Length: 251
Image 1 (cartoon, one colour):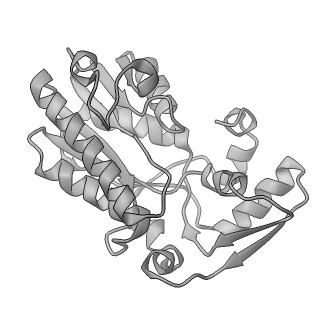
Image 2 (spheres, rainbow, N blue to C red; image 1 turned 90 degrees about the vertical axis):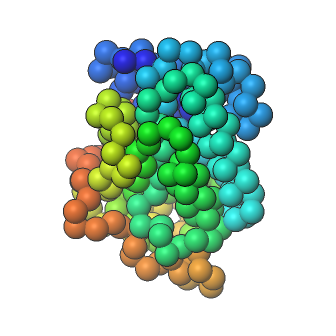
């Protein structure tokens, strides 16, 4: 089948593209570098011709609820409109495990995306995954100085590569509305992951975990982002991922 991947050059998207091609599908990358812009809608009609399914893993980096909502609603609306015109039969949206009670900050955007997908005319599946193993490193890279301060986050991280393969299986299986959640194999605490990653990378840096006020930060510390007992579990642990080529190559 022909699968279009919105955000196909990103941290998850490139794994989706690789998994799709490895499974024998024709994978098409939707990105601004490929002349397809989900925010303006430019190039989407041409890129989606002949597509059977779209996997949306687009992302924005913001803690502003207003900015997150605007981004995800705009991208979703443009994709769904173009998919309807192209006759795409299945829209798959990647979302985040356990965010139902955290309608704030970045998660407000993801919940808005889920609502927009469910209200659209294209048959859909929302596939939620836990935070990626890559998350700790992304936070650390955004901080300077000898001390890194990270929020208290109880999590069950999963490898982005496993998320990519999961999304391809979901896309090939047809629209079901809501797929089983995907989480990692072990409960973890973000501050511990950050310390282990720095130690593995040979970086001398102190990491402090803090509990922050507000609905978003309380949600991170609540444990809800670990998912439920019925979630599908990935196989790659954080420490196994640290030693893998994905981490060594920065993927």
